[in-house]
Image (cartoon, rainbow, N blue to C red):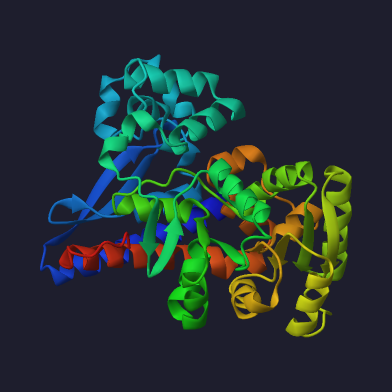
Length: 414
């Protein structure tokens, strides 16, 4: 896990450092290399080198190199300068029984506005009482958003916002479910198909380069924000997302409401065994829900034949799991052929629901680190998406923000 976290952090901070250096060169700012010597475990000296531009520190890449080497832990006491050792009592030097941390309990407590002892006492207590549970609690406190330090007044909360040309709906999970249920209920009176999609950082990277995908999304009725990447992009530009509305978390809530109304659903996509197992589990978990039919995404016939099969089953809502952007393009291209209420692109949902792919534990999802879990579970399949795609997305957001400043009249978030 250290190798995975350190490698990801190095890639992100390295990208940030390169961007900061290029920006400093462009602005003709002075660039210097600052070196600081801190005390590690057993008071061993550690050199930390940080680039500064106009006396402002840039990304601390060197810190993550030392983390990979084991000189730093993810959670631990604040790293003290070697010159500060003389101030410590013999009792306070217990802090050096453990390595200093990238994240420290003392700074987390200050950030959250908690009553806290001195840094020396807090670090000493951590070193004496350290456990996996304590480290997990500190990590959770550091990563879970804390409203007291993010006043709502600092951010706008728009109903929708534009992200690189695509309108994103800013909704809570429950309001999103209620909206889709209303569309299903009015199926007979609303002849036009309601098209629904979820977009995450990877989707944004794809539609920036794929005009067909972008045009498809621009024609969708509801596009919901999925994942921490979009939340960071919105906050970077002064907007706050009210919820993480992703298909995997929405699915159980939606199925519960559909089962209560005895609605008919159709599953399209995924491997044959996966979609079959998904249908079986849905019938078991939601007795009132009618699984009208299913087709896999590998051996099925033409789009016209698929639409005929769906229409024959008098479907209320269609779940399409062909992966982005194929599923959104399929929905857009075949909307006029479908006689139903709602069609939703759900990506890898069937893999998760059928048990073919293990989903991250709830506490990891609460920390917005599900992508780390997926990378660990499928390193070859997901390396490009997360190790390259995530930093690329962040760079695009930073560049877009700079462009936005030079075009103050624009109303887009990014």
